[in-house]
Length: 233
Image (tube, rainbow, N blue to C red; front, side):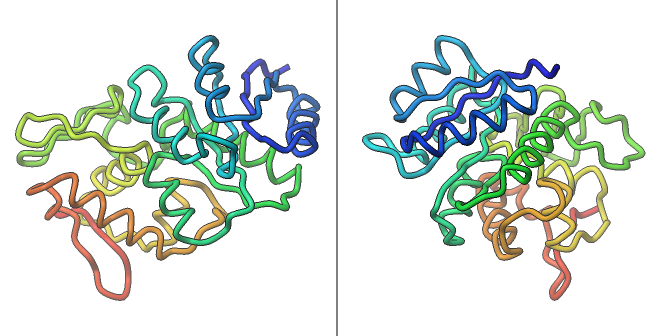
């Protein structure tokens, strides 16, 4: 039996019970809470290996919970799957930019939910098994940019850059193959897996945010008009 623990944060009891039932049936120990405040307390007392998080919560909303967990060094590696009725692209992009690992809209198929949970956990443990001539854990140094995959660390001019989990994966995907052109669809598939429930426009938004955070090193990510993006050789 898979002993990976999951925390479900959902204020609607029937939905929380539905998620709990299907996850436990798939072999995952589950805890459920109804508010953002309870979620933070639960993570602090007994960190789960994955959080399923509703956006529309009483009091502290899900985006705030996500932001706090991803900014805390002790919890920022915990994968977050957002489960919400809000399907607008702006909400999806904001959640991803805060560090969410996946995004599922209600109503949802329990089978799809389980598949997404399994995929997120697999990515978290494998950390992008992309075909790559360089060892997966080897430090990548390109001029003033240093990427340390095993430490999940990025430095520009020797100064650490704070990236979300999604931004880090996008950067690593491109930097591991300088000169290769990736379409937006390939970036989505490489970072989030097949059939990810957002539009390719979200990739453009993430690239803009990533370039801004990287400062001068952001120029290494170039746009190939009409195709996608590549990292300068």
